[in-house]
Length: 557
Image (cartoon, rainbow, N blue to C red; front, top):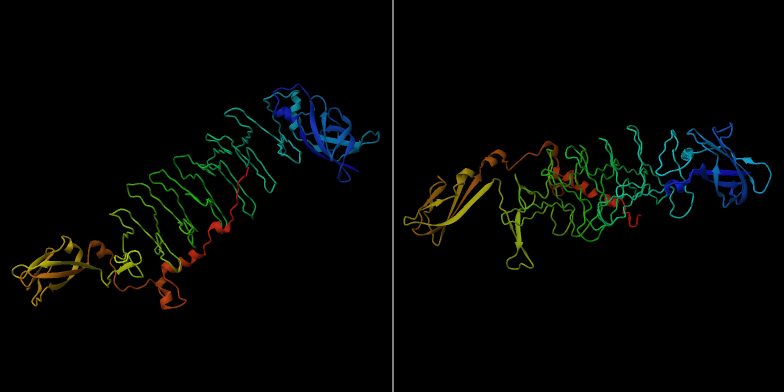
């Protein structure tokens, strides 16, 4: 029993795509595959090929083509078919093939069913093929033009297009319908290493594009990439640049108004990443993600976690390098109120910027600030400043700077003390007027005094007049004697009067039963607001670099 598997029509493919003008002809090339008992046939066979208007029954259209002793190798054959003048009118056509052994006079076996041919050969109705060629056909739910290159090896093309014009298109596809999910071009690869679309701009200079997409729709996408597999390290869009100044993926939103995005990424997965960037080089100043804004009120990079619950991060950064930086912000302007890192929290228990050094050993810093200006501040607090540990300064020890530090600690008490001190020489009457800063009485109340005679006892030394007009008077001392004095006050400037707090303070109801240092007071208990909800989740969060293995795309072409 002979079986015939038919391939797609090839309408003088080389003539359509390559030649400038060809003489009138109604012939076209047909390729097929012949099997005998499920095995590809080899040898010579007689073929009889007819064209019909219907899938079954009816009469042939045009003349029947008889071909004797057609050479078949490994099941494949190629023949030229000519049904006469104008057999293709735009209506459906079906091909019937009959086969018998070559050099015989026996009956033919009809291959069933008939094969519906594509619209590709309809151009034969013109009688000649003249380039440039343009044609149309109404082929609903079908293909207007179909080409198959059946070669099983080699770098073959079913369709190849070339334009030598500096503004030409090698292949151009257009879906002009203003409704529906249509495609100007649709490409597909079933290979496990294939490319649905491969665009390659080979010029080594100029602003070239391997693939360029544009959408004029108010809701459109210039380029849409979709990796539909629910598993594996797939890419909706993958970009690569081998240039030392290249860009793997470049997104550009040119509108000067509106909430547009140069690049927009979204992940619906519970462990997904909207945008993932990785700089795999082991040296150099590389960036996994780099953002830049030239607007006077813009942001180079903005992260926005919209969830009202859970441990969400607007921006998350991590570095595994021994000298790395998880998040590095740089405000390069030499003037103006520029900010390297800015953090804001609108929560009534929030933290604008939170830093934690989780190592259990070493000289670590939860937050480290540095200012190179002689008038600057490494860390500046606009508001109250608090610490659960001691407050100190640390410098290289002046007697052994190479091997030791010198630590000094702040004096603390239940009130906001301000301290003023100095030395004064008494006049001939054993008295003196100590002048304080002009702002003294504006920021202090509840004064306390301390006098210490230097060089000799002064049993009658006393405060003759308390502070008034930012000065106080000493009397009862030895004429010409030296006195060390100190005055303390309680801070009472307008900000302190508005925001000052008592030494003893009730915890909010939601924090009662929690501790700033739970390990000290109650083993297994819960920490307060700045430790319970933040610190442990920060250790458990897995960055995307650990969840997704790196895929080397070197030589992807």
